[in-house]
Length: 225
Image 1 (tube, rainbow, N blue to C red):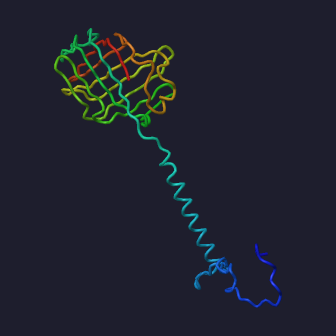
Image 2: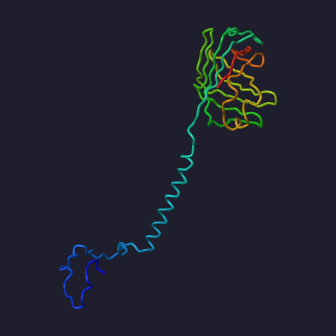
């Protein structure tokens, strides 16, 4: 029904162009499915789409583990204190009574080189360990060191070992409170808590070997991360 107009008579032969509302007429369009290329049947298109979806699925599954990986996190364990007394040996490097600072940088994504039910040994790359003594000795590791963490019933320990300055081999042992680490540290390195903690000799020590002769010095100070 046209609004505002009388119903037209059956014998009205006016064309649409004569109507006052002719400008409202809308051209008619016919919707139809797009034709496939002459050289691609429907079955071929379906197979092509399946292969494309399979390829996309493989790519997504392959990238997912990489995207899910957390960035590596490095933390630093620092020892500050005084060496002495001499527990054993002759101390040819004159470390007794010297103040010392040692740092070790550890990557939390590392995995143990060896482990037991209560301990894990990790490799620290060259350059990860450095130390300075007040007697003038200082060094940065030029070869890999190891860090061994042991969880015991009464205490936890961490031992750093490797090639030291002036042709020595060095082993620094720190005795920490029990439960400073959880058993998760046997799978990946992790900071300890609480931090800092006090270290006392003779349980915490520095041992070095030079020309086949070993010296063990007590260590009194702190360990933190």
